[in-house]
Amino acid sequence: MWKIVGFLVAVYLVFAVLGVIIEGLVWLTVLAGVAFLGTVAYGAIKGRSDKQIR
Image (tube, rainbow, N blue to C red):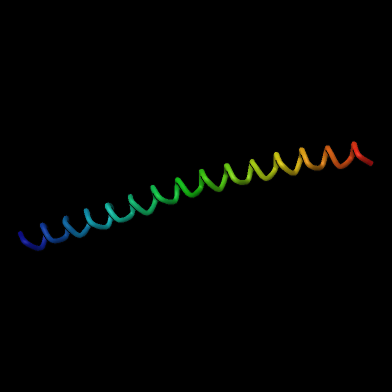
């Protein structure tokens, strides 16, 4: 009986830790996507203004 309870507690802890890690990775992915899109937009605007000057 205690082996089953111990196994279930271990499985619960693994899923809890994985949930925290995955949630953190989701937010990092969102922030990286926003930073990438901002960089692309800045590059497009900067590239367009460089062409108009020349």
